[in-house]
Image (cartoon, rainbow, N blue to C red):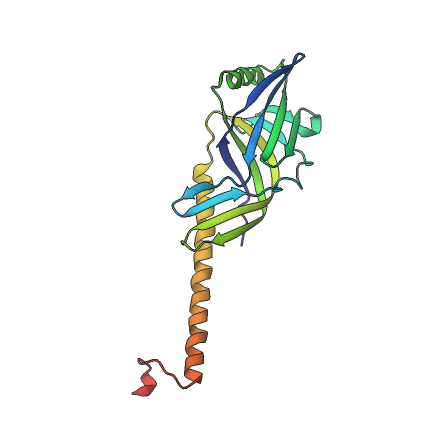
Length: 204
């Protein structure tokens, strides 16, 4: 199936600010593992532990509201630290005191005015599960991470749901085609055994 390309997921996060001997930090979780997000009725998604582990060494930025001009930190520069633990993807951003945008965000996080986050990524590996109740669950197993953002209003839901609905429609088509194929095989087997459908015109 064709992948969806670069996309985003968002969540509320309990960010903390810290002053460590004059060095200012914003830190918290940008993703939580095995936390099921409802995309729409009977369609859900979660991120599996280890999904980020293979790409954390790549060039990743921390941004404000996904704005590429508002860079808070960068792992290659040593101003962004990202790591996985049993809970999720944790990050620590070292704030530049000479950057007014970064300082303004630091104070807003400190007051609790900003407590949303997002991460921008590309899916490399995932699993789709059709449950007995008819619902779908996508489990993201591996991603290429591009950026993490501290956000006022994370805006990704519409594009994420739209992309997932394309997945859903493709899965439904494949399931319908598989069902038709199975039925044809079953009917052919019954005919080969001398059992014909009651509506078979060859019986007239």
